[in-house]
Length: 145
Figure 1 (cartoon, helix red, strand yellow):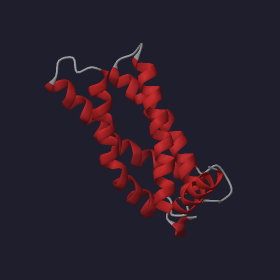
Figure 2 (cartoon, one colour; figure 1 turned 45 degrees about the vertical axis):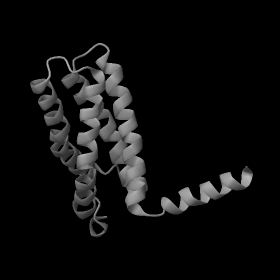
Figure 3 (tube, rainbow, N blue to C red; figure 1 turned 30 degrees about the horizontal axis):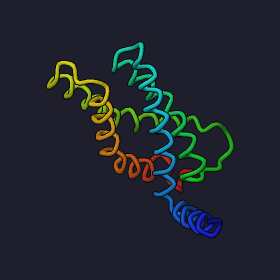
């Protein structure tokens, strides 16, 4: 059993050596946080307000994780410029999740929380690669840090 765990750990460590894998890991954590927050807020708020609040909080986690872990930016200071740029990228791609919710509510009167989550998951997956390319090429480009 210990050997199997050690082997699995080596595979995970090897996988996380690659930048895109680290991006997926950080994005996965931010996405899990987003869904936990969305569903928690959804208990006492509407879907659009819940979505907005959950997105803002998960943006902060995603920015910090991508800045320090994925793209390994080590410049001194807070990195306000990269936070503003990162937020811009996320807000632009947030249009995908907002449009998915809007489309869902236009086509179904009361879709239910499962349908809301499925629509948001599809929109999030659909914009992940686009976000990575923009973040690598602009926000966290190696020549800028």
